[in-house]
Length: 391
Image 1: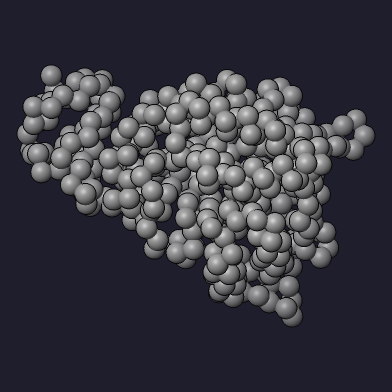
Image 2: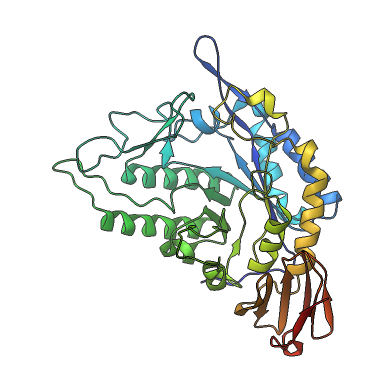
């Protein structure tokens, strides 16, 4: 795997640029966060003291997140001039941020593909699809693109984007969903799909400065620089008694990995402490407009994404996580010890340890006080895990 470069702790902000909105007759593309508004958000967050912003733009395509034709490279006109976006992307490095254009060619809506020609086929010769629990929703069904076509589309798009000087890219679903295409007489099995995905990502990684994937499978890790939406909770099976950050231990020091969106259910004090314990980086899903304005889009179920409502919290949470993880950035987790329920010691190969106190009482470990629901950073060799007490 790769090695993390740079000492500044990053934070990811995923910005929804546009999506389709249901009308009395048909639908239209709704601008949600324009390119100028994205620039303003980034500028304000930089001025607030965030030193390493990963700016992920979703819905930059013509038709937005759920309406763009995945076979074509296009840009949504209502968001602003494409040259403004390209300049914003190119200026990122020197201004202390990185911009990623996010795409999803894998799990899409019927408005994005030709259902007769582009959808994957399962063993029963039916199209591969997935329904949401609530069938009353507008666009409750998603379809899986033929894996060969999905790989072709993403390669073609990335080639064209790199020619425009856009060299950071992010993908949803492509690295996490593995399926074949079993159309009778033209079978393309999962083993073939795996090799194709690896070849595609290898080629993509040669054309990009940085590639991010969402919760990807392990065969993709060697090609990526960042992982979005990394799992932070256990499966909750009855025979599991604790959540252990096994995946994070494996990836630590090699790949930046980001927790689920703070403003979409990963917001509690325990969640923030878990980020620090796991070495996971914060991420936020943001829009310029208020959520009631997107209630007629497929994004209606996001409860709170308006940037203005979250900008103070983004800075607060980032600074706390950064204060902890800057001490171990680029280092590997080599040990994790539960002193007693709610008191966790995580040790790194640079000689530092982070002690997290999830309990409601102050805990004393080797004469060091860890306040309730708080943490400290200390030298690993100064910790005797057999000596500790509640105050």
